Image (cartoon, rainbow, N blue to C red):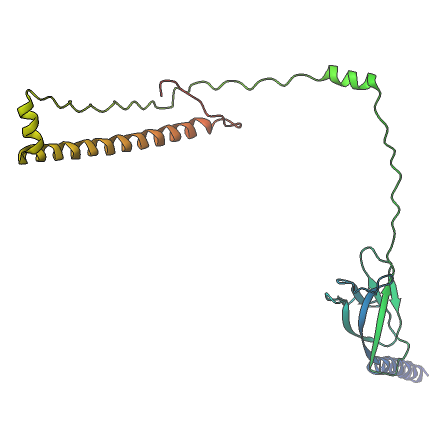
Length: 229
């Protein structure tokens, strides 16, 4: 008796499993395509979420509001977009393989909470003004002893041209030796100007580096000024 009961029980379970698998195999799918439009202006809506209600799988509409999705004929499509009312679609013809539909979404109006704006009383404003404390002035930066001082001596000025007589002046102007000496003097003067410019650049760079080293200790970096520089 127990063997017969076990045989019947396993036979019923096998029939149920076979029926469920057969139902899953024979599920009819349908392609649903179309366009999502605004209900008032009939303009396409981009970025609308289109998904199956049972599984949550889906897609989003393109810039023209178009979509194309495969779904079981017994399932339901959900259309959801920000600022619009949610809409459902159930395939009407379940025996076909593809359906073409246009879905119209109605704009959703959201009512915000009421906000009351009232002026503050003069007594309260006066109290706030009296309690306000003046902002203290920032402290003046002090000289840091660790910052090196760079002192560059001035360049030696070139001696002025002194002529003992008009003849020596003419000799220096028109003779070959005089022209060579004047040319050498001009070259020396040009070289001195270049050296002075280089010294000025080095001095400015040194000052900038010293300021950076000094100001790195402060949160509000304020450069300092030394009249001796």
